[in-house]
Amino acid sequence: MERRGAPGRELLTARLLLLLVGLAVLAIAGRSAIESIPRFADWVSGKGAVGALLFGLGYIAAVIAFVPGSLLTMAAGATFGLARGTALVFVAATLGAAAAFLIARYLARPLVERRLAGNQRFAAIDRAVGQEGRKIVFLLRLSPLFPFNLLNYALGLTKVRFRDYVLASVGMLPATALFVYYGEILGDVARVASGAPIPRGPEYYVLLGIGLAATIAVTALLTRTARRALRNAIGDSGRTA
Image (cartoon, one colour):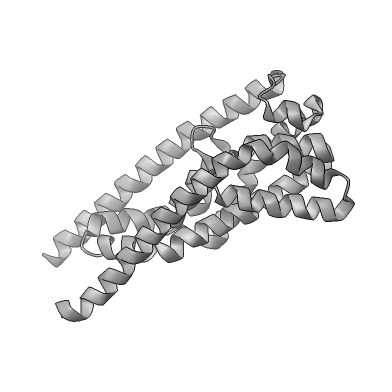
């Protein structure tokens, strides 16, 4: 039994190491790509629909590579305006987040399942989180305290259903529209990338309040879900004992 299981464990470990190394490389490349944002935005600005497509593809790659989304989102506002910029960023961010989710799920999730197989309590919590997945992801997307790019990979390690994960991406819309609006106000990609001060009006503080409320809500939901899962796991253990 152990001999047959060893190759499987080695394969899972290799997948995990590959994922970690890949994420480290992407993170380093993504940080170095920040300086290229103004040139990239200027390059696509005069290319019409093709430019918008190229910007969207670049945004998807940036999400996977941990490039800070706020800079590119404001660059979209400065380049394409509020309506087109919001639509473009929302679609590209959703696709990039979906790609990161699938990378984590198919490279690292098998190892997580192997670890959870021997622990009924953690397995029960994982199942419960999967059942509440759409609510949890929606609230996480509204919260400003959870890093977007890292969260994409982390959620891929849970049992959240892919469909629920994608549908809950609508929670990104308020922050997306706000940062695109700021980019349109600044009107210059170079100013956006250089860290020009953002004109934070009432809408910023309204969104911040919504985000903080979502943080409290998702914390309460996760706590309640975990407690229910633990009670169920303990009850199942008692019946089988």
